[in-house]
Image 1 (spheres, chains in turn green, orange):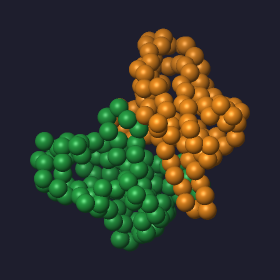
Image 2 (image 1 turned 180 degrees about the vertical axis):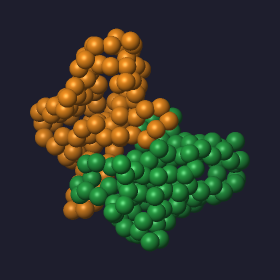
Image 3 (image 1 turned 45 degrees about the vertical axis):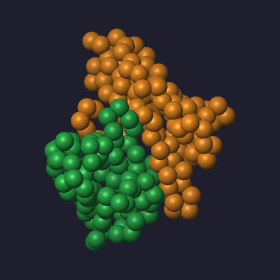
Length: 114
Length: 113
């Protein structure tokens, strides 16, 4: 069964360091999302891509976060410098349907900033 | 006020009980209503989605939407220990290719054998 792949599964980093997460969506899915989920809360959208273009990055803290999907397939989310408050689960999701009533999520990257 | 409100629980019920999970929302522009299940340390997975007011059934799960009250529910019949997870409601606005998906905070459910 096709699934969204994310790596790494877990990441511990010191504050002020740079960290990067990778996502490979389900083949053929044009829409890719990065969400942040703080423990005990629901996922919050950081950035949405349609193919290689950013559709919505209004909630992305652009002073420290960046995201790219250069060839419209896999994607990288970077944080530099990391802050203690960035500790969370970072979830990638992909979808092919419009409207997006079924987003498939990866298992996420659990980030701990110390 | 958040656009989507969900009781975080936790909620514990005995095996075989009927479970009711609820969300309220304030944005009348929401068009699609979804329920996701999230097991510990995993990503959310879609259970069901509905578009209109009324009920939609899938096995032991029933999703209910009341647009007039801005209230949605998920009912789980004959609950099983494997249903223990966090349940997230989510609501979608879709407008000419622009979409906005908003999640509730999730309700943590435990089914006691």
